[in-house]
Image (tube, rainbow, N blue to C red; front, side):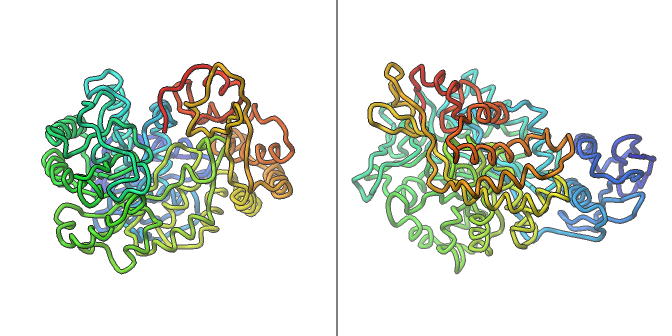
Length: 563
């Protein structure tokens, strides 16, 4: 790529990749991130093309404009808009004009726990990935400090985790993104006071089921001294991120979380609201100007009356929250508007559907399912899906791109495969993607003593008794799997594309499906996924690709943590 020095002092311009003019409007960290992206995707830039970035206050905050030919000028109304414009140029070199998003919220929630990808990936790899998401219009990253792993905030492991989460926020900031800190209302540390612990067993006080995802260390807010302890812990966590520029704080009631005791039930209409005002006060004190997002995840799942109570509270909800964060399945609940006319954000589940271990069989694209969800959530202000790793990368792009501009999901899938795997392979790989979704339904099972246990209950496997692995999938069709693999293998890829992790997780998924249909061994493919997913011996079974040698080692000792 040929580069010359350009200087637009009023707009704060920079030239990427070589000589750089002084540009006070664009932070140095943002310039470096832009440099890095152009370098990594230099093969998408036509030869002899110069790229100039400039902040233009005449544009909307997230609006960008592309102009010029040999010298392509990318202007944005903010730093993050420059990343959006760069992404557009890299995908469509000939496009010129202005563009701005339809929806304000286009974020990703990194579930940073269980020794998953976000826990274990090297810092530079995570920075690259956050930069990639910015190219597709992502304007916010959320993380969660999962307290139950630790024995207080001073626990060495807790301090390491906080440092890791701060680095994620730093990378997001370098791309001009919003930073969102998520939490559960009554979550607690591993050594929480036993006498304060929440009741999670269903069958009483209106609860039909046990609370799932409960670690049995959570705190009942009505226990003596519990509220003081919850506020102390939350204040300490907020202090740990006080200088990260937190823009949004989100609190959810369940999974994990909740309490079914008679004083708390139903939790989403009672115990939850005992905790929320204190958290809101702390958030506004520690992060001046931050927005508070009220989570309704799993409302009315275990019991009844939680949604009804939220609407009954009406304007009072708007006094503490600036948006609702909901399961898209609950879209009908807010079809005529949310309480206090609050904006609604969809917490799309893109990680666990149709595959256990999550990501354990490769990429899990779900364009048909997500399109239905997106259509039902047309009135949403945007989406912030729950993510456990990079294996659902295509699902992220579907949501981000649709939130940017409503269009057929098949077009978005085409843009994704064309950008990463080559325009000439677009139609073949779109078809392969849709075929792979039809084959989704993978499940690893440990068979022992007549019992069949999934990764969710692997801690119950007796390491001293014989067991074997089996792979279940009622949706797998041999002809469909063979066709999808043949389509992928007939593509011509560059060396870089063929070696990329995106291609490997996509191709390995198709190869695994074809092999499973023929009852062939898939240990080699699963071992490669183990490496790509950054699994370790500490990774929980629900996230560990089930290559038999890996699971033999994992289950040779008693698992003490579970979902």
